[in-house]
Amino acid sequence: MAQQTSAGRRYVQTFISGFFVAVPVTVTILDKLAYVARVEGASMQPFLNPDAGAQSDVVLLNRWSVRNYQVQRGDIVSVVSPRNPKQKIIKRVIGLEGDFIRTLSYKNRYVRVPDGHLWIEGDHRGHSLDSNCFGPVSLGLLHGRASHIIWPLNRWQCIKPSLPPNREPLDAEEDDE
Amino acid sequence: MFRHMLGKTLGLLGYTIQYGCIAHCAFEYIGEFVVCSGPSMEPTIVNHDVVFSERMSRHLFKIEKGDIVIAKSPFDPQMNICKRVIGLEGDKICTSSPSDLFKTHTYVPMGHVWLEGDNLRNSTDSRNYGPIPYALIRGRVCWKVTHEFNFKKEPEGHRQGSL
Image 1 (cartoon, helix red, strand yellow):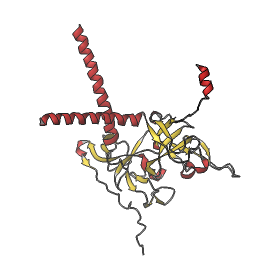
Image 2: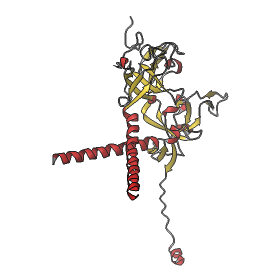
Image 3: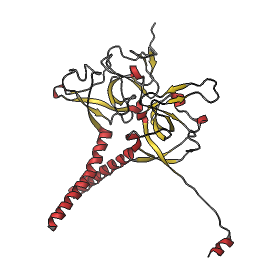
C-alpha cells in the first residue's frame, strides 16, 4: 500500500514539474519564435486558399523576424485587425513608412504612409478588408511574417516577397519630365 | 572529464531556457514594472515614477474607461506611452476645448480607444493623433511605487515621558 502511494505521489510530482517546464516553453516559442495558423477567407487569392471549397491553407508565421518590426514590401504578414482586436488578418505589405502610394478604393487617391505605419492589401481586389478600408495600420499591430505554406503538402513552398504589378510606391525623386 | 563538463553545460543551458521562458510568461501575462518619464500624466504620475502594469486585463479585454494604460506609440512601436482611457469603442468624445464656442464631437471607431493625458496642457495624445487600436495597449497601471521619507524628530521630553 505504502509503495503504491509513493509511486502515485512521484507521478504527480513529475507531472507538475513537467507541466511547469512545458507550458512556459511552449508559450514562449509561440510568442517569440514561430506560430502556425490556418488562413480563412478569400482575400489573398490566388496566392493563398486558391480553391474556395477545398481545404484552407496553413502557414508558418515567423515571429522572430518581426521582433524589431522589420518588414519588406511584398511580404505577407499577419497583423491584429484594427477593427477587431480579437482577430488577426493576413495581408501583403504594399507600402512602408514614408512611401507615397496610389490607393485602390480609399477615401484619398494618394496617401503618404505615416511614420511607424504600414499599408497592407489583400491580393484579391474587392474581396479584402485591408488598408483600402481602414487606412494605414500601425507597426505595433504587426504579429508575424508568413514564411512558408505548410499544408496542404502539395502546396508546400517558401513564401518570397513579391509586389503585385502596378503596386509599387510612387517615387517622389523620379523626374516625370 | 569532457563529457562531465558537457553534461553540466547542457544542464545549465536547460535551466536558463526554462527560467527564461517562465520570466517571459510572467512579464507577458502577469505584469511588469515600468519607469514613466514625461509630464503628460501629472499630477497622477510624475517624471521618473515607477509603476506596476498588469497584463491580464488587456488579454481578457477588460480595460475600462478611466483606466491608466501603457500602450505602444502608434508612430514608433518601440516606444511606449502612458495615458488614461477616456473613451472605448462607440463612445462619443468631445474634441473641442472648453473655450471654443462651437462644440465638436467624434465617435470612437470599432476596435479603438481614445487616450488623453491627465496634464491636458502638456500632453500629446488622441487629441493630436486620433484614437488608437485597442491591440496597441500593453497593460493597465494598477499600482504606483511610492517612496516616502519621513524624518520627524520627536521632542526629547515626550520620549522620556512615554516610558
